[in-house]
Amino acid sequence: MAVYNPKSLKAEEFINHEEILETLEYAEKNKNNMALIDEILEKAKPRRNGGILSCKGLSHREASVLLACEDPVKVKQMYELAEEIKLEFYGNRIVLFAPLYLSNYCVNGCLYCPYHLKNKTIPRKKLTQEEIRAEVIALQDMGHKRLAIEAGEDPVNNPIEYILDSIKTIYGIHHKNGAIRRVNVNIAATTVEEYRMLKEAEIGTYILFQETYDKKGYEELHPTGPKHNYAYHTEAMDRAMDGGIDDVGLGVLFGLEKYKYEFAGLLMHAEHLEAVHGVGPHTISVPRVKRADDIDPDMFDNGIDDDTFTKIIACIRIAVPYTGMIISTRESEEVRKKALAMGISQISGGSRTSVGGYTEEERPHDTEQFDVSDSRTLDDVIEWLIELGYIPSFCTACYRAGRTGDRFMSLCKTGQIQNCCHPNALMTLTEYMMDYASPKVKESGIKLINEELLAIPDEKVRAVAKEHIDAIMNSDRRDFRF
Image (cartoon, rainbow, N blue to C red):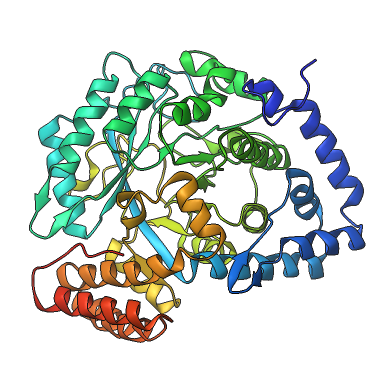
């Protein structure tokens, strides 16, 4: 029997089934232990010492106790703490991005994804470099600066060379004042050598969803194809970091298996990365199973309601305070609004989940990976965020300035990252307002920028930020950053 060891490089030891079962038993036993819950909440509170911000986070066991607790008063306290932590470390900024689907060719048999090999109803499509160029220009014309590229696993149609060529194409396109400044990559688990190639191509974050940490369930959900190999998939982040990639993004597909099991496994994976590599995940995503082509989410009996989903997000934020959290257009406007307050720091906007969808006037559905619940335009999303009191941000400065991996986390853990992030958010938002916003959104955006400039505490930083913002407003100069 495998023994739990967060420093092990073997999947069944750092994501240990027996440890998860013991954790869930411990959480169930203590879900009404108010003294313990108070102790856990107190431990998780952010604190300042001599102006330095710190937050301890929680272990997977401690966080699982909070998730199991159903006492309304304590749950309310969790939500309040999650919001406090979010504001302390990420402020009221929300980073915007869009997915770009390159190809839906795939050799895997995943039961929850319409791209699975046996699906003969979905049209298969792979973008040429010229088609990628057209897609990127369409995204730039919306105002996007950050993309997450997606492709099915197919060594013939989607080899690493195709991914690398696509990244080169994307970074090389400058249309009017548009430019994609960060390309995150969500492709199948691969080798250290190929991760090294992605690093050399200057990707941002490497993202790979585990889908489920339950090994038995994982193998049943992935009956055929290379993704069937649980260990190879689960150990991918270690290979990515060995290949020099500083920032990696975790996630599970909630609804496939029991959510409490997935929650514990997700946090154990984060603890493993911290123990082995000295830095945890850069981001954690929280997708839920959605309808798509031949996929009916009702066939999975582990779906979670919106209240449970919100609680999961809050508990993740409390447990890993420094990690960015992502929610996509899988979720509705209402759900995303709740999630923003609980700790989400990145959202997609104006997304199309089909291959080649951005160049079509009407949203195509024939090659979608999942149904989009929030189909608003990017401009609508920007307006909505401003109305909710958030600063929409297109910032990519930390990655481009080398503030990645442990360097980013060290700044984040002390709260110093806000000296960069707040003015960078305002400068990138100014770019959006001058180049892409509708007149109504531009008016409210400029008002927000002027108000938030006054909130920059450092007088010198505030003066430089104002100088750069004035330059953006009154000239074609762009891409200032701290």
